[in-house]
Image 1 (tube, rainbow, N blue to C red):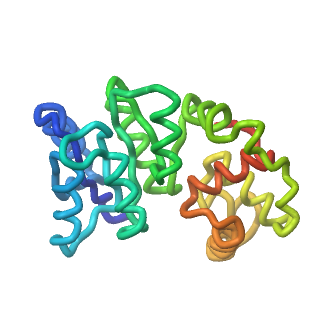
Image 2 (image 1 turned 135 degrees about the vertical axis):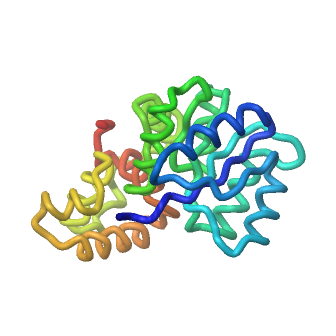
Amino acid sequence: MNPAIKIALVDDEILFRKGISFLLQREENIDVLFEASNGEELISQLNNNEIKPDIIIMDLKMPVLNGVEATKIIRKSFPEIKIIALTSYDTKSFIANMIQVGAVAYLIKNTTPKDLILTINEVAAKGFYYNENVLKTIQETIVSPKNSRGGLETNFLSPREIEILQLICQQKTTAEIAELLFLSPRTIEGHRNNLLLKTESRNIAGLVVYAIQNELADLTI
């Protein structure tokens, strides 16, 4: 049995935060490590707790230190921790900003409990999870025609790396990619690490943006 997914919740709305905590604690494979009411409190808990969360569920608009600034700090100090934005803001600018600073998923607060739990499990398994709305925003906002490089800088990727990159963009797990390509999961991990290095992406979510920007992948889920 896989170890429980360790979660930290960050939201200044206490009732909402407690509701999410109650919901998640009912899941056998999820463990809520701690809660925080703003980004500063979150950073303090991360620095003081020996056990770190695998995933932080982060609100955007909070006092003292907001979710965007907190995400920037976490990406530098705790790069292994994945951040899911959970907010009431669904404008393209907010979505694009959070993805660019390092969020690996973006959910609106009126999402269903089922979708929240699905997103947590997908992020734990694959490193990111973008729904159709977020992928569309990436295409329209982050990857604009003026920013698109049209594949001109992708000749340093091998055909196998491009193939694996396209499968990552289809949100397939390492195990699923390995099975499809008749390779070992360890080999797939090696290719994935090479892709991160070659494209200078900070995480798997960054690879997806890179692939779309260079027209290497379709926006399919």
